[in-house]
Image (cartoon, rainbow, N blue to C red; front, side, top):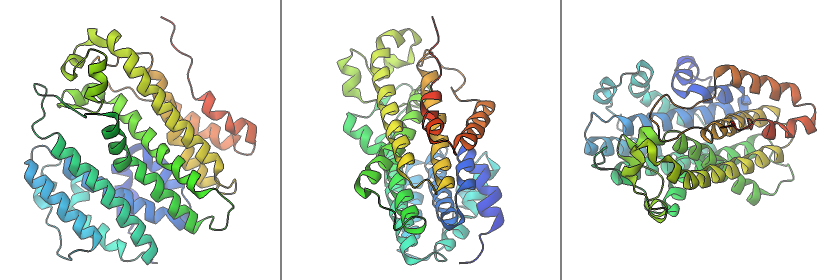
Length: 341
């Protein structure tokens, strides 16, 4: 296997992966390249889907061509130059301009790794495509919601739960192939891990998504509570909405708790992988706690864990790792005391 292209899997990856780069950087070399490449290609497809100044048909067409190119259906180079020109972020512009370089790196992987990457990227892009079709015509005047909890569960699987499966199968093959593990349970927990992280994003981004006409909380559940998507634009609706929102906070915590069990089921010798899993979980738990103490329908700055808090979580996790008891309590410690009102 050749050395990775430095600017593509280091600097550019850091620019587009934001906080997740911390986890990518610490991964063992045996899996870092594959996971980083999968992330980079998924980020490229996400950038295409999010380019709202380009027509829906063009974005869907570009997504399908990218998926087919990744799957090896055709070898024709992708022409994403025009899409790249519409990116306000220099990093995302460069990502689309260099996507062929990323795709070519797939051929440098083993056949088994290629198969894993192509499978997860096919699932992710199918979720992005479904998302574009589902919310076609959505606007603040015409908010479209998912229909049921089954649709929400399917969406979180396609864009994140499948990543847990991919991550686990890849690490299992390269890092601990002979470890005595319950693979079916491990994979189920991995899926919930990914779903939990995506649900955190959905719950945190609710006000912004609503103003783009998207509501990922199901219409059936809103209706049962005497609500409709458009009523969530009003901050004064929050007291009536809070019980339903709390139920999804609880679901997200449950998924992340399964992710923490997953992390602790991995061999203790896999320090880097366990840390890479622990950090997004601990950050996610902190985010959920903050969401539990604010008016979530109030438009304003996005709720997030500060960089200082992230650094403390990272340092504490490394320092506590040699002490199993203290390490396991990191999850409970990440839950901030509720605000007294």
